[in-house]
Amino acid sequence: MKTQQKNAIIYCRVNLHAKTDEILIIDKQESEVLKFCKNEGFNVIKKFTDYTTTSNKNQPELKKMKAFAKHNDNQIDAVVCLGFDRIARTFEKAHNEFTEFNQMSIDIISVQQITNFKNNTNDKNN
Image (cartoon, rainbow, N blue to C red; front, side):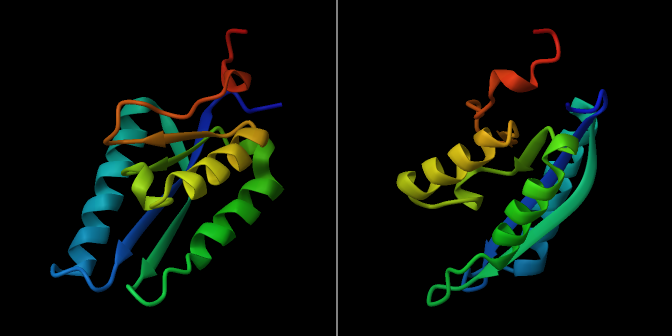
């Protein structure tokens, strides 16, 4: 059973080959996500950040986040990210990730996109 207070984990990702300052990008992502969580009443219990490159698209922190979520799914209501493209670049991978979190009754919420992948098992009013 989920807790009364809404708990979230946040996920950020940046490509290190971007032509901008990676640290500023991560700081901006994290700042926007934390602001959203505060405004929406989420208690952030953990943060995960991946740094990918053009040649290395592995996301070890995403894997750690999923493992953390599996071990703490009864305490986590949502994964919050700046945009869904931070989690996955392809529809197929995004669908797989969203399905996995949905099976744990954990919503995936994007700060920038209007559509969010919520499941009705988190609706406290049902």
